[in-house]
Image (cartoon, rainbow, N blue to C red; front, side, top):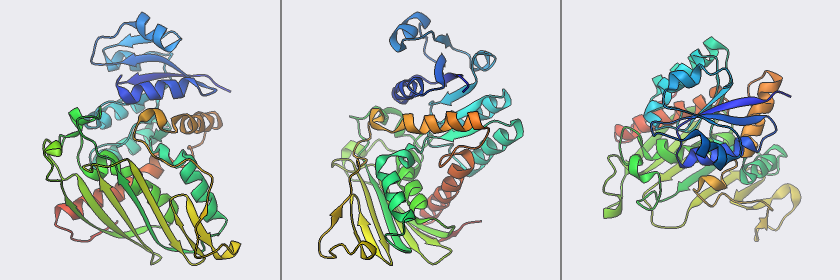
Length: 342
């Protein structure tokens, strides 16, 4: 088992959760932080319980031989350049979502990682949550049969009360309702439905509430996916709602249905008139401290030890989700014109 020194790019809300999760794995140890803000190394070390160097220069941190992995938690508009630089320096990469702000930037990151032989992990950590691990196991056992319809929706009002709001409102770093946060729901839908997406159709709008007026882009979208096997799916991305956080999941198959943590299965002869309940923790918070980062990062370090791509959230796997996402945003910008996937 190898010990991996990890250098953080950015030191905001997400970075704090990442540091705790990385240090809780068997192999990962945060050894450096690079931030545009001046940070005191002694204070960082004391706060996180181990020696941490503080850098203002990305180039200097990438030259540090104690850094084996770079964890990028900076503004999304910087992700492409920072990830490409990290790959060129031979560093493996943990990359917060979104991967980048365009299809071309995502492809640049994937190409750079392949060229320099480094591995990547994209923070679609919901795939490692109790909710979607249990749901996927239920599907793999065939208890819902063949899915022909699925919907996974993201409802999370990102207003002034939320740390991300101050930069999330800009088109440059927020981008769209899907890109800024709804991508988690779209990614979960693709995980559960399986198969290739043939085309997408999307429409977008925004709230009339003055709370969300600073947003430079539409903060609600609904996307319909047509899969090559004939199945259809839907993802709503709503970051301008005034309600509790809700990650809605509804799957319909030839042998039964699932609604969040409830299900009916003909194969188990459950009562079709009453939902049976699954024992699992639902995704019910946008707080990064509640996200299953540790399980995801442990899988990443285990994959590095084995010299293989990590399961579920490798660069290649995540890039497929972003291909669908950018097609959806293209459709919404064209007023709902269907967009075929290459």
